Image (cartoon, rainbow, N blue to C red; front, side, top):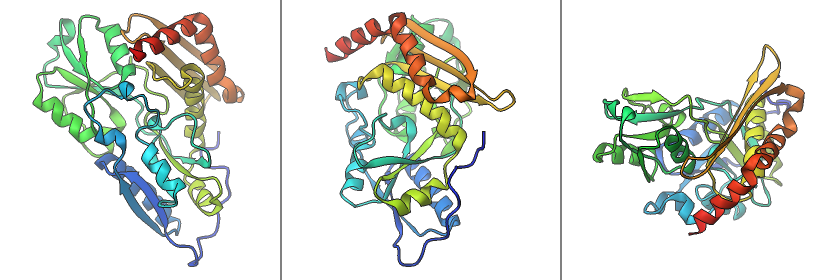
Length: 322
C-alpha cells in the first residue's frame, strides 16, 4: 500500500486566495492538532489562520455523553461554523466525528495515525486490580470492557478535556482513569504511573486526526488532500464502517481496530460489541487480503449482528432511553 495520498502535488496557492481558516475546539489537545495541520499546510506554501470555538461537549460536563443524546457533540459547533462560512476547514480527533457527515461537508484528509492504545492512569498502587477498585471514564466502550475484565470494580463518569480529566483524577479518591494514549502523548501529559491496556479494543479511528472541508471548496480540499495518509485512511474507513452498520445512530460500547500488514499485504480486523454492564461480549477477529478492505467493516458488523448483536443493540438502545 502506498502510504502517500493518491492526489498529485499541486502548485503553491496564489496570493489571490486568502488564508485557509482552520476551525478547532479550544482545548489544549484540539489546538495542538490544529497547529499540527497548520504547520503542514504552511510547509506546503499555504497561508492559514486558526479560529478556536468552544463545543457543547466541552460546556456540558455534568452529564455522561450518552445521556445528552447528541451524536457529534464535539463536532457540531464546528460543522455550523463551516456551513455558515466562518471557517474553511476543521480538525478533529477522528473518533469524535459521527460516521455520517453533515450535508455539504466531506472528509478531506486523514493524517498518519498515532498510538491506538487506551491506557490506565493510576496513583502508583495497582493492588486494587486484584480486588475492589473505582475507575473513571466517560466512555461506554471503556466502561463495558473494564467491567467485563474486572466485574467487581465500580466505574464512575469522567467528563471534560484531557487536562480537566487529569486534574479530576488527582483530586479524587478513584484508583485510576482510562485515557487514549495518543491524546496524552501529543501534549506531553502522559504520566509515569500508567499501564497500557492492550486487551482493550480502542474506539473506531482512535489515534487518528481528520480534516474536513466543504464539498464545494475545491481549493481547500486539494490543499488538505496533500496531508492524507492512505494506510490510516483505509484502516479508519473499515473501523467506522463497522461502527456505522452496528450503531445506527445509537451510542453503544463498540470497539474496532484495523491494522495493515505490509509484509503479507493483509488487513487484520478486530471488532467487538459489549452490553453496557460488560457481561455480554460479541467479538470478531479476522485477517483478509488488502483487496477486501472496502466492505470489511460492513461484513464484520453483519457477522456481529447475526451472532446476537441485533438483540444486544436493541437492549442497549432501550437501556439508554431510561
